[in-house]
Image 1 (cartoon, helix red, strand yellow):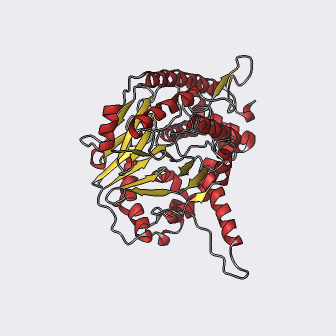
Image 2 (cartoon, rainbow, N blue to C red):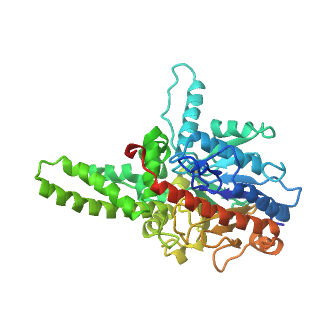
Image 3 (cartoon, rainbow, N blue to C red):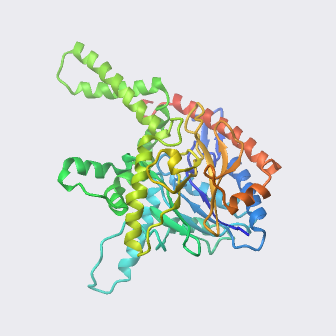
Length: 478
């Protein structure tokens, strides 16, 4: 009988005001009206774990090994929130996860994304310190490394996440192990393979430093490995997506700008301010300055609007052209390249690929998505944030279930416009885990209906929060 071995969850952005798994407190007599209170537990979080426990109980029974979580990146919100709020929200997550103490393992795997990339940096620097401490006097010190192994991974313990876990009375032996950026899972016979990654390297912006190097030094262009991409871009990713937003009032302003990127009026004001500053540097007459300011402001506004829509994934499709192209490169170059560096085994002709980052849950064959690569089944974990005032149809959240024979099933928990849950595999396919879930789980049971209602109300609350933030002024405007 098939048994669930892993649950894969990503993009919960703990500590963020727009996260459904972070508690939002309303106070009508204070400004801001809404704020994160990470000492309290999100209603969605409270209702999510009884659902997951029900699934594990129905499929695994009581005697099976405990299910291990794979946290697939952007679990901590370190770009637009504080590390204290993220840490306390993670404690609330753990409290819900282990409230009954039986279903889930106290060993977790964490694969950082772009919004929590700094957790990888702190872990690998601690690892490097320990490595140096282990050397004999005058022994050569090797350079620091930037990735873990994908196959038989050399996990790096996260002291921060592990110590947060061990603050819980019943989790004194708990541990959070980091793999980055790729992880391979296979069945015991090594006939089935699953690759997991957060997914930020599927967008060109996260390779900006590599792209700039190619422009400035075109003679140095060559095929990149995943190690090259991380080594060349880690500082850029860490600064802009995992550090800048926590930089005092500057960080607060970045957060407000992020929200204002969905308001045409706010975008145009921002663009006009930037254009006014730039034009003011020119020694030109007032009439020309006026027309140049508003002309430049118009085009800047269009450009900023496009960036904002791209960052939020505000297109209706589950994948854009850029990510589709980069998925082919990932499957044909980056994954095989790392595989060949780590093993003599032949790279699999057929595999499954699980990623997050886009906040758009789906399961599909590569060919149905327009990819050139064949024999790949893709699963996206979606996300648990509400980024926009208006509903974004493709956005939603899922948990990917993996059994002991490396079969994967998407448990689609909600979409913004429809909170009806269902189990999903790529069209035309099935596997023993999917068949067992479909047979044994009643998705109309009270515990599922309660979660559905809670998600609906919390989505509406997040929209109110965003509307209020759009009207707020950045610190420099007050």
